[in-house]
Image (cartoon, rainbow, N blue to C red; front, side, top):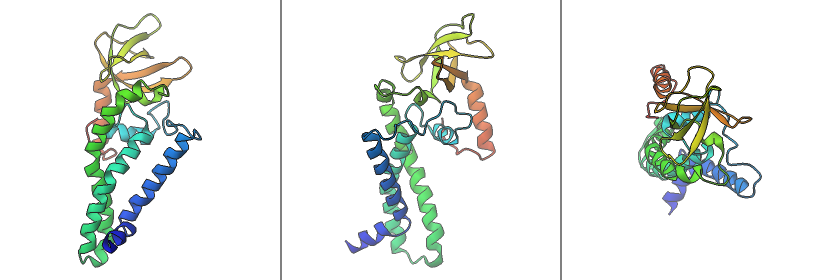
Length: 218
């Protein structure tokens, strides 16, 4: 028991205890409606670095706060196991850098199961009464029909065809059957801006080559 307590209160696991406390306080404030679930979500991915990073990891279709909470919760037991290993090793001055490495490893190992859990719950978020149109940013849609004279067209989510959105493009018109990625929500008109899926993937691939985004599938 003493070993478990020392591990829990020592570095690096104490870092995860602090994160869990923040997650608990956040969702308590959401439950009492002091803050909104979508408080970390924005209308565009252009300058939203948090959302862009999460989407690059595969977290699309759910609130950023839920994705982060899931990642932290799933990384915590992994971090505890790694902390136990570090506690037994005579590391000396290496304990601090290896502790930071353990933090990174815990998040890296938790990423895939966290993405899977969020994908499994994405449809519930899509159809929730408190659903926000911002949660759909980063999702891939399939265009149902060509753009009309005003540049509008209807599209369905590739992962959830029951969800229909309206696209309004400024440039090239949409073509039926085309796959696009939602990158901006125009709240006033309740429409989305979308870019061709291939262009979106190419842009993220260039960022990966510049080491600006982690190497994970979108």
